[in-house]
Length: 267
Image (cartoon, rainbow, N blue to C red; front, side):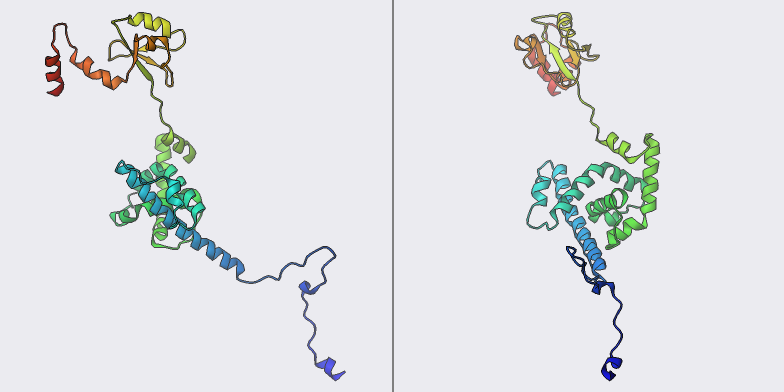
């Protein structure tokens, strides 16, 4: 009796209750595990941004020098990159938003020369903060972007108002949309006439006469003329407008010699 009186009362803990049949007992909660997981995620994101900046730098420098710096996949899947999935996503998304990011940073007036050496990391981090997800302030670039976050967002809103778009998605589509080029064809007037070619082509396509180059016709973008009888018979040439501008500018007259035209071309 004396020993039982000295024993402490049993702890009230629901985890000690017997589990039901077929039901596994939940593991005991470990304080700090969630914090450690969050910290690990923030560290992974921190390094992924820097790996993405390294890849982005090689891609942009390759484009600037007209040389291939390697494809994004080949650069990301090199052994030096650890978090390949996050790095690949950051590079692709930053490139997608890059024209907007450059315009926002330039118009904000706070992108000083101090950050030029780390501009690729600035682009990646700015994307992550402005268009991606909220991040932890874990480095000098992150601190810089977070410090001026409101300024950057104000600049972004002004750009949207100036371009008369309601959101960033519309601004992005405006930046990435490439206007297709029309198909130019030149009529070989030694074999046919411009009018007869227009009569044939207008049955299948919309045909316009070029306003600068004589005997040049303008067809809708994507028009495939490679196997058309007019082309195979030599009555029409598939020729770019720029290559016809020289002859149109010279306007050679009958009797001119080829040497005279060569002199004019090289003068």
